[in-house]
Length: 198
Image 1 (cartoon, rainbow, N blue to C red):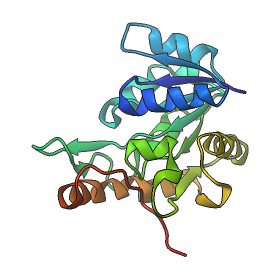
Image 2 (tube, rainbow, N blue to C red):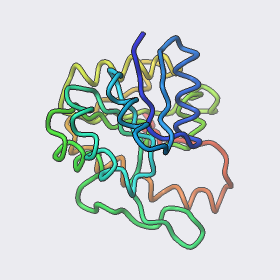
Image 3 (cartoon, helix red, strand yellow):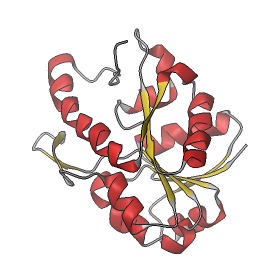
């Protein structure tokens, strides 16, 4: 059991918070109230960034002290949205939100994961007709192992979880968001994930 703070109470954050609570973790969800994110992060061992990626860097840098020595699980994608509200381009081309966070928060262990799927798949991967993949990117092996265990609690089989390596590998998974609008326009808003056929 871990103490977890979820920053962001939209569909992604709410979905993760509910599933992690059901798995037996002690979960606090921070809404937009002043000081809520700081209070939640201060008392947690693991902090999940489920805030909109375009503003995540500023929000989290403001929590530098609260995030010191914590594991920061980043599930967001930093994009500029098109007229239809779907992702149109990356905010950090040639880099990634996760890399920007790790550079700005050197005393926080950033792990990127769960950002290559629609949000319902994050907590119900077995509902897809084919096995999905969840990817891990991060510099700290122990932090990645902790996040791997959280994913198992969310229903991810061990063989569905792939450690890609250091935080720089997050630029590949974040770029996968550019598939999303095209898939939605062609197939509708049905749950899907990026997976590697083996």
